[in-house]
Image 1 (cartoon, rainbow, N blue to C red):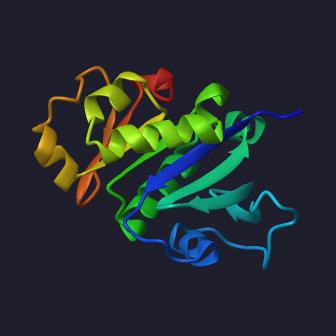
Image 2: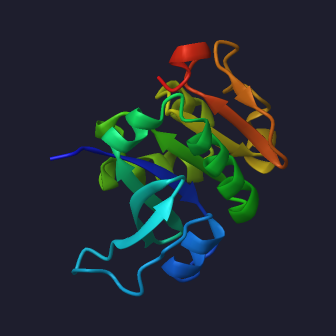
Length: 169
């Protein structure tokens, strides 16, 4: 069974899931969930994914194998950056460790982000971390470590977990 990774966006909206997925750049969005899990199939960043929304948290799950096949995964980074630009989340992560992609772990990250504990989230080294200008103002940049690649984005900061070939970890 393939393990999943995920992108998670902390939002100030409870718009319908299909609308949020479309704003995030997803395509081929299924009309309904296939079962009681509430997961909706779509494609995002060139991968078959499943989307889920829960109380201001948009989650997009994708297979670890698909991500690894795309390395260096520039398309995934670009899709994540574009989603952050369109959704304007307070914060967002793209986790590249399967244990971080569990729903409860992502809800825990949401709690840290809502509490504006960016430094603690950054210490977990998610593959990508987006922080809005508003949240960074609250932290005054104390969360940023110089050992990570940064992607310029409007309205916030987007950093990888590391540098160079190991930037995703």
